[in-house]
Amino acid sequence: MRLSRYFLPTLKENPNEAQIVSHRLMLRTGMIRQSSAGIYTWLPLGLRVLRRIEQIVREEQDAAGCHELLMPTIQPAELWKESGRYDAYGPEMLRILDRHQREMLYGPTNEELITEIFRGTVKSYRQLPKLLYHIQWKFRDEIRPRFGVMRGREFLMKDSYSFDLDQAGAIRAYNTMFVCYLRTFQRMGLTAIPMRAETGPIGGNLSHEFVIVADTGESEIAYHRDFEKIDWIGSDIDFEGDLQPLVDQFTTKYAATDEQRDAAAEAALGEDLVTGRGIEVGHIFYFGTKYSKPLGATVTGPDGEPVAVEMGSYGIGVSRLVAAVIEASHDDAGIIWPDSVAPFAVGLINLKPDDAASSELCERLYTALTAAGHEVLYDDRAERPGVKFSEMDLIGLPQQVIVGPRGAKAGTVELKVRRSGEREELPVEAALARFGA
Ligand code: P5A
Image (tube, rainbow, N blue to C red):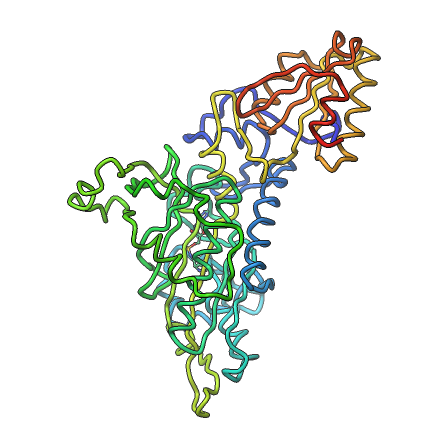
């Protein structure tokens, strides 16, 4: 991508309305624009990151045996009256009348809708278990939308739903998602700590929040140091096998929110206790028959009798994760994207586009890197070098390739690693070899 043709409306100054670093950096780098309170447009750079995060979430859901579908954003109120949540959800729900005066709503979550789909299609226990998910926009009329996409009113969620014949099956599904979540966040370079949680308006009696550690997190947390070993969950998980022992390794370790903290347990941990702040990026629930009973989602069991199916739901804040990754990975100069979610892998800086040798070399590098499968953002603009350096650091691409007239003449380029700041001058061929090009 040539920066001269791209749409990257960066801001020189820190926007006043942004109180936390991710919100500030997302506005400054031209990733998002506010449309109204808690509602944002995703500009090209932001959308790239959102899509990459979404894709990691999707791949890990698929690997866990979850099947993707896409439910609508607008739902009929009747279903929510059937479950009893229409009134219970209160003013957070955006209620809409269509032209026939029918009551509709913009979905804040989809338990009712998926249960309706299930009850109309699955009739026998032989068709179980089922795990379904979608990645769709939600609307919650939050009383205090704030911190940009961290707590928006419109936000992108991945929500999965499990259907099982009995509680043992439902717990298996819960464990599958539990492990799947650890893998998902790990791929984004995040340490996600599962914490016992309240079930709130979703319901049920078993629930975990997945919280990542960041100084600017909304809530205080305390946990066992072992949670920082994020690679203690391998990539070769057998989702068909018994995941309970693995889940137990996590759930038996100390992890507590502010309200749950236990002074005695913490004293016992001694050096192993870590305190910090956390951001909730995922939340899973087992709620049994809370929706299947009132909505009549039953299957014929092995003995021929109807059984209300056992359900759970499992959410990931996809748009929130974009901000959460930034909270966890930035410095004074700007964002530092982990490779797995970076909007482009390489930033190519042409320090003097009106120098023929520099521009020729840049074109060659751009073509070769792209051909080797790297996404390159090429700063070909006629801007001062200082502006180019600081903007490239600000948007935080993992690798930079810097070309100036002196190097172009000598056949060398400079490589810079954004995270460490390490710089190295190399012959062009050696630099290309680093990228497998
Ligand atoms: C689980 C999936 C649910 O809604 N129903 C379907 C269940 N859970 S939840 O905890 O309420 O939300 C799941 C995740 O969505 C993110 N999230 C938000 N992100 C941005 N802005 C918001 N206002 C917002 N509200 C929830 C969180 O990451 C949460 O864990």
